[in-house]
Image (tube, rainbow, N blue to C red; front, side, top):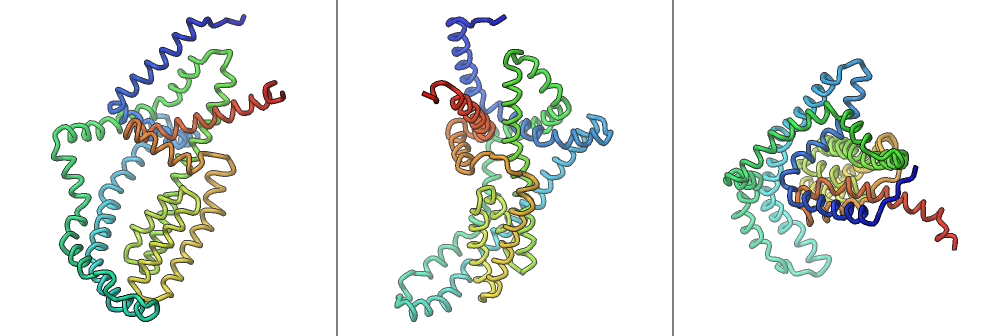
Length: 354
């Protein structure tokens, strides 16, 4: 029997939706750790399911995945983070000597070949300014952390996040399948098939970005950092991480990496051969991504366009801060799937065939 929805019920539904989103907007700072935990649980659930297929219990599988998350996070905080800080500090220390080399070697060559005056740019002033301020630049991360922990309110917030996120992640991972089942039971049976189909499509788009792209970025960062270290580049970790992180935008990661690494290689070795090695490294990285990583982890599914990703994150940050950045991509994925669905419905409608 078809149940007709009255205009009053439609208005009540619309008002309820507005109130719901307003409450979410007000509670955004409180909801942030729960959303972060939700992202971790979403990323970890497929691994938990795989371990269950290997005859692990659900609790044991969750414990293994949770332990992996903790090890990865602690490794970044206590190993990768200090290495990045050291490389940034070392880079800033070397800038004055780089400026000296430019002044002695490059400036005369430019004057001779392009008729540029050697004093067109006052390199001495730039050098003195950097010498005076490199310590403050080099201790950027320390200053940032000091500002965080100098405020009692911020300290309490960060400590609460540090406690809440692991606890909520553990329980979400343990009860993920139960929660999904409970949610599906709330869906009206009349619309269950359509909503289930749309949910699977949303999951495919999110899986492509969160799981596929995250693995691609991680592998690319490790590959670029290791390969650049192998050819002797001093700032291999820093450059490799930048190129890997930016690689979620097609061709931008390799372009940024080549430019930065080539400049760094030439300034370090003062030769062309290391620059050629840099091109070889990033060429191999593109082959690795295009022929192995992307087909294996992402496939041919049409996911979120890089421009859509950038816009969604920026819009989310502008509207709701950190909370908005976290929910930006899931919301964008849902909107994308809904637009595709309604576009198909439109193509089948009488309105399109007029």
